[in-house]
Length: 354
Figure (cartoon, one colour):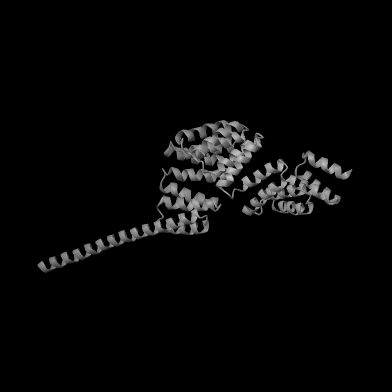
């Protein structure tokens, strides 16, 4: 009997030892998976920072496979899908994140941005409401709420939301930019400039703020001031296409077509297919008596975007100067088809018909 008891105790010890080993093994496997998921998440983040969304998606998917119950991993993958323009896939990821963690304010906020991009304002509002429910002081949530109201043309509500964002994070320059852009859209340019200047005080190295200041100054016909802002923006970011283009427009307005062309060509180095820049080059070349070359650039603009009546007007003007009356009439008629109330087209068409 004693032998039997001893044998039973030994067997029990072995079983308990095996159970302990399994628990340790499972804990070790879980630890390995967690560290591996973190590794893939880090690689995904690095790829995303470089703009390599395909690699980011691959790595974040590996992280999700290893840690399927971690809401952060699903959120990371959602961000990558969003950057890639795969909005429906991003929604699935964010919804999975909030299912795993119903109080995850950032995931609701990300959902709101996707819905806003899809022009689904009601769903975006609901997402922001959830984000604020779990983080009532979220400046980013108030800022997104403002963007949704602004898209709905509910400017008073947008103004309130942007001010709440500023109150929650008075040191975040982005919220002053948002408020400035709201004033800009409403035609309150001086108020817009005030907000952009506040943003510039907080982030003097941000080229886009000076670009916005340049646009606002140009709208007030303060062209020298606008020119200075664009030049400052370009010193900070030599690849800011819009600043080159708009700086060139000011120079063209001043009659300096050669200098304007230098700006437009630099803009093309940033994006060789930018149709507004191609159009502006065509106008400048036409002004310095190079209609044949100008025709090539406006043709490229039309090839890139055939929905702008002014492109066809420009082409019609060039055909007219080259004596190609029939082609000019075709271009003017196309401009009228796109924009029937475009008075200048009728005037130029009339000149051809005389």
